[in-house]
Length: 463
Image (cartoon, rainbow, N blue to C red):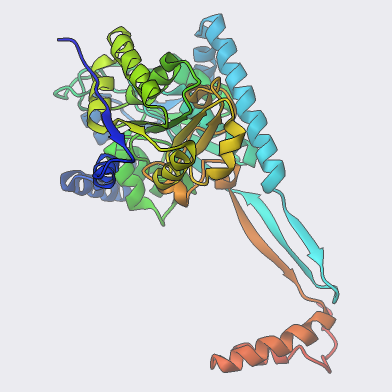
């Protein structure tokens, strides 16, 4: 049966727009109760039994039987071999993408990731020390859902930040296992490894890589086992079990974000070929039935052209069924009164990916406050940002771009304040601190400051 896609048609001038618009945007991030309980059980088990629990869950969910977790680790030689086996064109594309991603994050580090300090008029030093995290874990979907670009986007900024150890978890489920939707129980000497993912790990500088997935991978990274080292932060996308596990271990380790379905919002003035815009809407819809693709445009005739291109192009898409369901259930083509109104609605949505498909993208960019990434101009397709433009493709979803940022070098660094008060500075600051401390009833705080006021005894010389 041929798939058809009819995204919801809305007009901001219609009386019922607000209610229909809100209903189309709604997405619940609540995790299934059964998943939450299962994940909690796995986390406790891995925390208590370590490697033994990891082996059991890897066999149960991925169908991958191993005698030890050491046998689930990929060597640097294996990663290099995967890289060398790639077709020449694929190797060149991977290295070019990695170069651009690294170049962008090096610039990002220079702009915002350096230590600084200054001395005030009393000679006191005040500043900030920026240091990298010691060890991070990156989760990369494996098996059929393989994303080498996610390896680059997670590992390279960590590497640029100065992280010494980058531990990658990538499931390699056996065909027919629970992880791939089968009945489970399958065993094999090797799961479904994706050479491009392993090659990307080699190019990006991953330190260690394990063929472990799911909640057990997150647990192993968060708590550590006899074989898997405990990390300081976990980043990277995953299924509902991975997302739930990351929520559970937050506080024990840092995490990047809890990602929802992928999103694209296109602001179009009607000048871009309708075929381009239709395909850009497809580019997110093909990810997942829950993905959201929205067009905002003040030209009703142009919206008709985009719908006609959707109808024409959909049968040519290998993932047509997924695209159709995504567009039918969550897509929207919205006729606005103006581009200014379209920008205002975009800020309300705070999309993950925002394309400004216009002849004057820089006219509208100042009006746009909330988006994970903004793609300016008709030639800037969102897919270029996914793979090789340079900026990170790990972006806030579900409206969280109102208060969250893309993954970056800063996510793999921490900041320590530097304070060195001079003897002269202590006279001024001590009086201020003592007054406020007495006001709070904290007398030891006040006395500690007062002891450093005038008539300070000479400092003792250490032996």
